[in-house]
Length: 431
Image 1 (cartoon, rainbow, N blue to C red):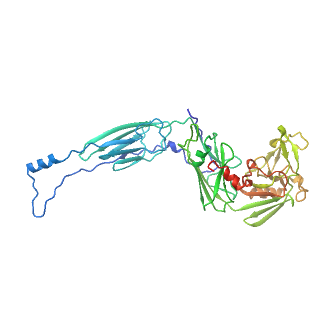
Image 2: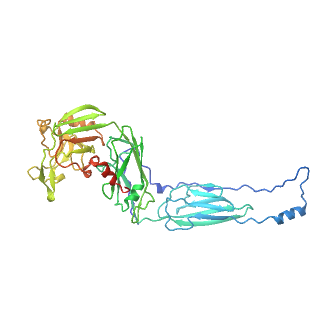
């Protein structure tokens, strides 16, 4: 049997709509015919004949009316897609009644119009449905038909979630910064990424040009070509239910989310001047002395190289922690190495990279802030500035690091905006 996941709640009082396949509202769908009477006409000034002989001649000359024929789609099936409509049609007559029930006996909603009936409800996976229909021809002769079919049963199912680049749940109807990168995370690897991407719809107002980018086989990120305009609304619909995403993997349910883009907040962290300038809109509102990454590199665990720069490039705020627990082991530098350090709690920490770069309070380096870079990569601030930035920033706000050495921040570190647009578009499965 396929595994069914419980949808993770979003960080919002408004929950996402329940699983659409479970909808089984009751409604009977019937159609009735009106009596079909006979009438005659006469030429002006003449009386219509009503003699038995005339009536008998008229009756014997009328052609017999064929019985109504009822057809059902699907006629019979074992693997019918539950998102496909079910239809009933009466040829040579009209439908009097159509009843479609699920295995529990609950009626499936539908609409009838003359000779046709069509279901209006999405069905469930792996269920057998029974249809009973009655039609009548012009002579009032009734025809009955009973039909059944079974919807497909997926080998496995996947549920989509809406996350930030840090992997935390997005809030439905939340407000995010102009650099916000929403992520659709599937809880199973996706064999057919093109099929999954075709099921993802992004609606923006005003219109925004953007593209999907597959970071791996479970996570696909959406980014505009340029930063959003403040006030833009964004809605993402993951219409994966009933979609074959490859190798028998189907979407468990459709999911959707919407958010609004808040005020433009961009911070420029300059490693050469040792200052962070914060702009609201295009107005400079605060200048914060900082001590950034000291530069150079050291050997880390498993032969990796640990760079001690604050990597240049475009970051976004991805999380707030007060306090954050930091240790050099978390990014591959052993705590017992010459530059390593054991876990410690750091207050007023605003995270901007997935591998642990923060703007945070560190009063121990106040003497160097504005003058010298001493950190392992974070941006040290005094208490007032660290607290101010923490309370005046939101997820999705932009932080640009300039005039720093070392390699550029990579996409996997939260550097989605540092990926050139042509490369980003090439990361789409539909490119």
